[in-house]
Image (cartoon, rainbow, N blue to C red; front, side, top):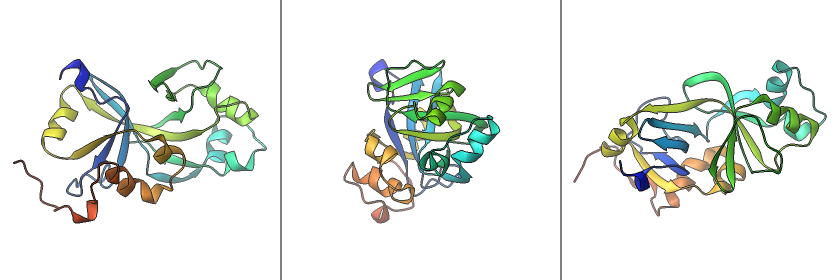
Length: 188
């Protein structure tokens, strides 16, 4: 894949024909895509877990009820005990942060969660456990098989829109109505 063809900061919108239960009707933010593979976070699959449980597991406390009640996402099927925080950039540097774009970062270190618990964290954040990973060439092959639509990331989908609306809303960014697409995949 040419350097300009990488899918960093793109949303992968699962086609209706994608039957893999890990990704059926999912929207995945591609955080990193290189010739070695890709890493993404599914942004529309809440777990039956709240941030209060994550904070408790890390021996952190917070009086912020909004933070404690925040849902945690199932970021993907790989390493689902590993935490990822998608967030707006802040002045503070975290131990392990990858800029996805100028306005969206992903951090995997505990220090960002500790700052959030103290009320000093990023202005907007979403926490996910696990990630979606693709080996070299695997995502490109799935693209050729019409498993995914791609659209530039619209951060309002991540931070503002209810989870159950994200799949259709992401496709609508391309002018696609998913309910009108055939379940039969193919190539012209």
